[in-house]
Image (cartoon, rainbow, N blue to C red; front, top):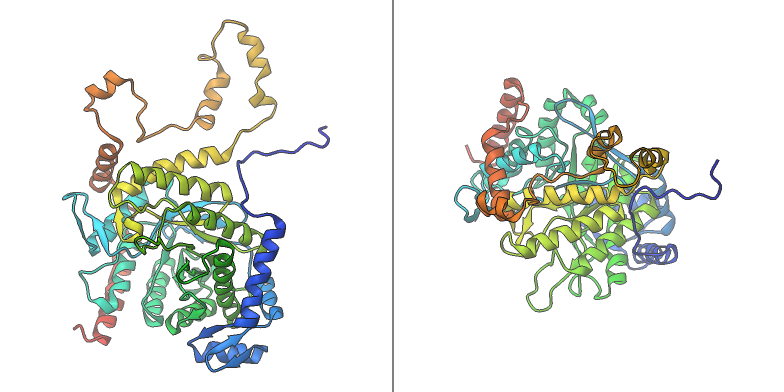
Length: 485
């Protein structure tokens, strides 16, 4: 029996101490109670008033007891499922980390032409197909904002492009509550009905407040619809330190977290116990260029700090990694992607999005996605850490081999080499002459080849004709309501 023995099988770290977390949470709750927030929703304001909030016009000051009540009623875990098999694919809780793409980039790097173009329906479909094939990318967001379809109904087309090309869980955006309702109807067709979708959800709604301290009507409407229908929702502020949030990182955390908690309060008032995921893309405004930086060290500090706060509050957390401020897939993109992927994995963030982003969230790239898949595999192996037990210490095997021997033919090696060693599929480990004879290909070259191979050879599990016909009917009706047909 071991006494006073601490096991640390995974590699994790924390940015904030318990005391710092408590201070930040206290400040966020104080902001909600003292400063309050603006809610552009009559329903939300009425619910808040009935619950004891102080309402002045559109501004609501939310008592701390109401925020704490919402934290107590929100579940501490959210399960997501494969849309084809119905099997559980992700358990958003604790330190479980899952990676997926980002959403709605206006531009997309066409892998066939190598050009940065306006994103189209086929780009989103291709991205979903690549996601479906990559072993370390766990969920799908639309890596492109579809712009070759009717604008006001493009969210339905975007969802169709994703769900027809991958069975992995997905995080979706919708223009408004009607768009979200149509997407839910399409999802129910895939899941087999309303009850089945609620029991085994495969999609999460992404909705945003506007920093600082504003909750738009469309965002609130979708948030409340998700609560009512049991659809998991991630509510994601995107404050910029020095612009839409205080310049200090602690101030940005307090302000942004108060926005998440404001959404949580009305969400739980609508339906206590409905699945809610705390979110936040917190970063700085680069004071030279004014860009919303996706790769600053402060960005990664804020992601990890948010995760510390979410663990403290007992909420699943939505974070960001696998992205770059670089305009192209280059050494900068690889360095920035790896840093963020490792930080979020070590911090134990749950739902980690924006893999595949270039140009500070403006451009989607399949090569960036494929490269990041490899980096995620490396990070997952690192975070998994080292198992220490009688078998892995291998003293008996060492004794059998003895001085001067080798372990290549040992059964112990055969038993453990696949689980202990991470094997690259993209990184180069060839000797120089072998690499040169094979074409002296760079990481970017190999990523491009892998993208083309997946697009040519991978076949996602198809939906039925009945399901596809129902999608077309829903989209056709939406187009007609908006006057497109």
